[in-house]
Image (cartoon, rainbow, N blue to C red):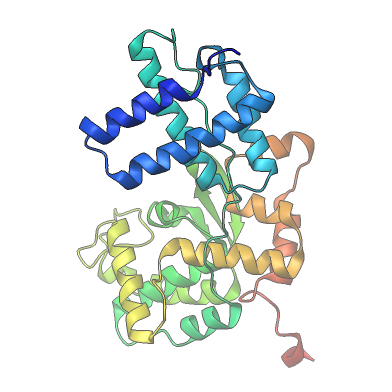
Length: 306
């Protein structure tokens, strides 16, 4: 009967960790469980000893665990234990290289970021104060963030010349210096007109920025974040209000109402959109039509018109 090629080197390493390695008993026990789990699999499906382990074996092992329903967190922990032990074997000269280096466990599903219901956003925006000039600016920023699903950097980077209130659109410079035109809803246009009527009291004539600070310079991203957090506290919102929350809320509400994922991707300006545009093109007129029909702050008040 041949000697066991698996457990003696593992137990020697674990005993060393327990004795002089400074590891807690819980850590050593976790290493033992995870590495013995690999040994159990390898004896049935894999190589005949640690020296025969390669990257393909480890990928098969991870795939087996994923198929058995193990969580990405568990698989990552097990892979980390195997990687650490194989590093030990490399230092001993028993392996030329660690086959676990560079290997990543399967990723889990990314949870959807938190969002706000449409009536929550409406209650927040409808209750915004307009009792001073900076409140008019803040209301315009929030309405525009939600109206057009802008990133914070896109909002603070906007210049006056990129906004067309009559046409109902704004030209945004997004990630990768990619430009896109997105609709601006009626409520946002009203708030922007109110702000533009008083903007000159802060901004000097040569200032191109759409939104400026009380000192007349382009508003800083941190200032926007602070103003939104302050508004949330004053309105009693039970969560942290930040620009991306409004961007995500806009995208979620448009998608729920229209079901047009491609239009929403166009509006958000996601990085992978350029690949989508190779196969199909969505022009601005189609995007504006979907927006007018679906966005909660842009719907025509047909009941009143009737």
